[in-house]
Image 1: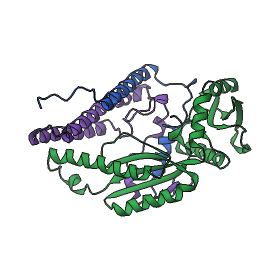
Image 2 (image 1 turned 180 degrees about the vertical axis):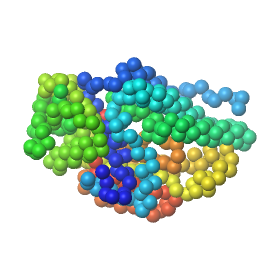
Image 3 (image 1 turned 90 degrees about the vertical axis):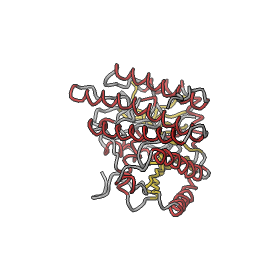
Image 4 (image 1 turned 120 degrees about the horizontal axis):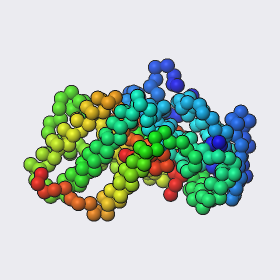
Length: 66
Length: 113
Length: 205
């Protein structure tokens, strides 16, 4: 949906926002594959805890046997 | 559609390279119907790999900044990460996935990466 | 099912009939809603929603709600407003009189490394550090002109920065001027700036 010949660049920004941002209302949202989504929730928790650990500098250092 | 541009460079197509597939972008939805299951699983696996790759790279950069690594170690780390980066790109291509595809939506939890 | 499109403070703004919107009021807040429909997700559907939000934004400050946010009925909408009154009121206060501006920055002088393999592992890592520094420089420069800012985690490839800025409505012009200045000052980068958008990235604290 852009003028002929111009790449749909602003769609990237729109999708980031409308689908990835905004107020989140936890309601009856249908999820396509519940089992897989549970795994994602687990991953997100992992990422958050890693990010926090990174900030606090408590992550184990890379091994010295490089 | 409205013009949302406030400032745009002449070579605009640089910014369009990774257009996500809109139909797959709905929050919380990984396509699990049989034809797309493989792709959904590949997305999941590659996202985890990419997550780890980014984490390791950040740690390495911090170590380098901290000045505790020898030139040799820096070079070896760099080679490893270059290889990893290249391999990730190959894997994504093999499964027909873009960078956006592996930056998964988790619905209320936002994006993974 | 009811789809919630935006949240604002009472009193509700005048609603254009064409968009099938109705207002649900509770706890001093207003949720602007439409009946949920099952149309397939396409760019055109997203742009329609965006246009509707922007028209509303001309009348009042609002918090855009993520696309696809559905609840059973108006009573459920009212419950959401009541339960989250504190957070939502705070968020509305935070974005009062401001809009969101999006910025993406790419690096272009990577031509050598796209035609031949990068010189060495050390170069690869050094350039990552350099990228991070450039991204921080641009982000901080623009952040000074904004009330608040967010940035996404780094991506592989030539994208150095993907960020959002909460800018006073009247200050968008000077923000864009600054973007243009930064572009001139850094010819090896490409800066893209889009907006104004409703404050999607600033709905939670």
